[in-house]
Length: 114
Image (cartoon, rainbow, N blue to C red; front, side):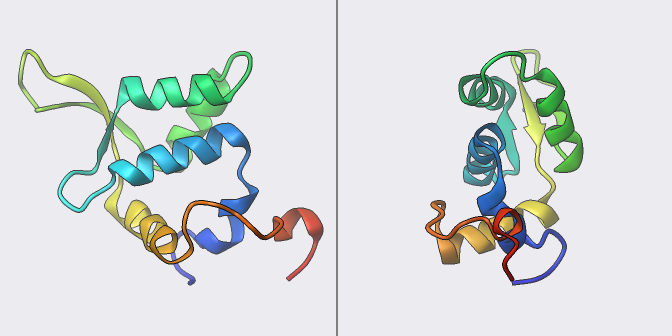
């Protein structure tokens, strides 16, 4: 698989917090809705990372096109959500549909293998 995100090259190399966040976002991406509840995303990052996860979470949000908003829009009882870019998350889910969420192989970037 190759394309916008090159999932096969980095997925198994993610650190635990980013790995968990990716799985949570992917599970909430499509086919009808593309958002994850902010409280769920924040809790996932907090549980998977010791210490302050704020800088890494901010980088993750920026890199993967998460946009803070609310759902349903214009509803006084709406919940805060991160909207997920379908282009990115459809490709990630395509990879996960074929390969699953676990990583049996070593990270090729860390082991310097092709």
